[in-house]
Amino acid sequence: MQLPMPTAELLNIGFGTPWQAQIEFLRQKLRLPTERWDDIQRAAHDRAFIVAGAAKADLLTDLQAAVVASATDGTGPQAFQRDFKAIVAKHGWTGWTGEGSKAGEAWRARVIFQTNMSTSYAAGRYRQMSEPGMLKVHPFWRYVHADSVAHPRAEHLAWHGLTLPAEHAFWKTHFAPNGWGCQCRITSVSRAEGLRSAKAGLGDPPEGWDRIDPKTGAQVGIDKGFDYTPGRTWTPNLDKYPYDLARQVVAENLRDGVFTRWHEAISARVEAELSTPGYQGLTTGNKVDRLRQQLSGGEQFPVAVLSPVVVQRMGVQTQVVQVSDYDLVKQQVSRAGQDFDALEYLQAQVTLDAPRLVVRENGQMTLFVSDAAGKWYAAVLQETATGKAVFLKSFRRSSERDALGQRKKGEVLLDELAKR
Image (cartoon, rainbow, N blue to C red):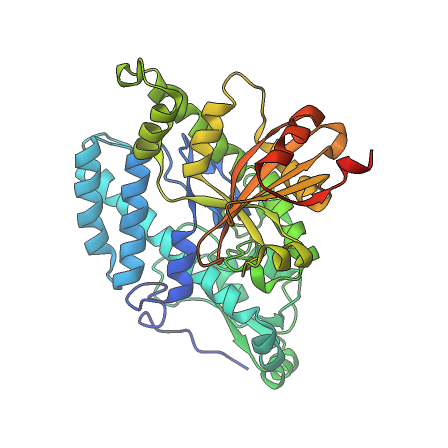
């Protein structure tokens, strides 16, 4: 069974046709400053937008906006290159070999565009192909190589037509793109088609497919850092997940380094901003207001999950608790001088799971206090007016004395302290 190579038109991957899944994937990424392209590795790219050498927050914001605009408007690399040229001129950035070189600038724009478009397209495809309804009808996935590539990789050519069950380990590392400029893609096929492919000899990966290349640390034929499945750890709608699984996903995402780097980046920006003359003599409240205007970019990250009982009691429409850069700015100011590590936010889940005191204030804010892991913590949640989002407005270390004082601030919904 010989499969034809797809045409170049079919492999205009992620370009030309706006696709909501791809757009959502690009929009939800946190902007992280980096020195090198491999500062962020593998699945962390599902939640981090990076451009090697781009450390300025405003520069990253503009570059991400240009990438999102390309996906939203369906424009191609030429339009992005024009946007890129204007952005780097605005910020005075020359993050490529041969500063001032037009060829270097064009090359960098092309790499940023192609990599973001191909991986975001793959993430959207993975999300689509992994849906239970789709897997029921199309339980096999197929590797498809592009015939328009001028210098095809031998391994990628060998994988063309390979058709394996969706749960096969091969896809965890070989879900295209598998390298810089790779235009391969993965499609889903029916059970009958998958079985026909197996009979035709396309149902088993080549021998040694999982052998590691010591030069790259990835499987032979895959470029360094591309041995992962774009979108596998992307969770655009945790409300579709069962509570226990959602908790697990959030905890894993908190530990993988992206949240820590984001937290550290905001902390560094707060510290740098506060050192400028404009903050001298301001009250804490005025400092926070000014910092938020300067630093908040609309980013947010899930840090905990509410139990079904708490969701019902709060009357909200989501189980996900998020922290925004808007609130992290204030939290950084209020915790100045404290050694409060980013991973301490893992205790927010423990605090919400086993509170000793719950106080409801002003209808939209709830305080949970717990002596989690032998330490007292206070977590303040606030839901939006529609109840479709819940934010961690404050998370801090507390004490039993502090907890007792919180009783007077609103309606007490739970008071385990009174039993002592």
